[in-house]
Length: 336
Ligand code: SF4
Image 1: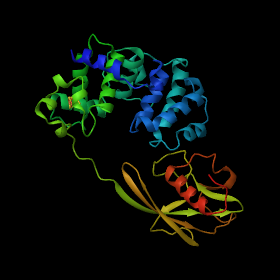
Image 2: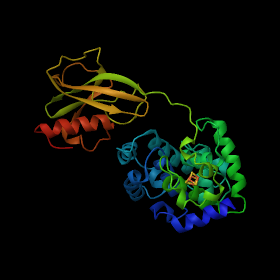
Image 3: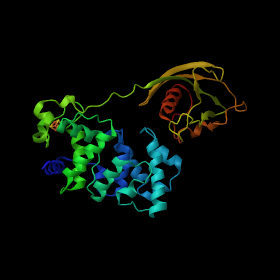
Image 4: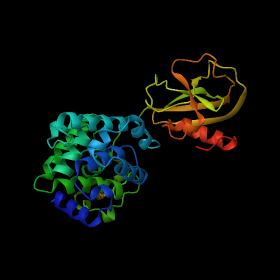
């Protein structure tokens, strides 16, 4: 009953999104990875550009790493781009370029966990496997007035079991997308629009007016605050850049030289401005300075001189791209 009402509602109310035009597993995969931690209206231009640049698995697998990173620049959580690229390569080498259709083979693809495998299986291959993400957990927690902590894996498994039963006899693709759409458009984090919800008759939170109490979630950790000095050093139309990814952030993306604020690596010629960059788990407080190191001075192994004319074509970590844009706006160098 719930499945029937949900699927009917989805068919009448679904948004017209480009990745819903076909059930091609590659499109579903790219859209699901891009939509993780990212709003649909933010990821849509990236999705459209990506599909134009890499329209199929082979074109993605054969791309250069710098092309992949550049196409993802600005979208955040950059490991996702690398995993997509690695996944495309694996599909070419292990599955002759054809996306595997069984759930256990899909799970072998880098970057694909339970949720994405279930989403691809149900949407692209019509297999009755429930995909449980944050939106789905919120909807089901409210429908059942569940006291289980949605941050726990055991809760996800429990919800998946329930949904696998509800899915029996329905269209798995529309059921999965219907739940996702309901979470995004109706059963929102704040102010759920119960009056237009197809699950209203079955929802305990609606009946007892407890929507705001659910889902139950244990408190997440506060982001850690860190302070650094960022150097802008230009000599003979070359900018000093860094490929030091020892902190594990955004490997493959260029940086400006950045050192702990306790250690002044180069003599500071001029303090320029401060910049704050907020990640999900940490905050960078950056003090941007100029120094006048020359191209024949000693530098670290992970640093090198980049022609200023190539700044634009390189993939940059977003904090440092914004710093460069701010700096270049004030200087007489060509814009980014
Ligand atoms: S009735 Fe309200 S709280 Fe219940 S699932 Fe629908 S939108 Fe969410």
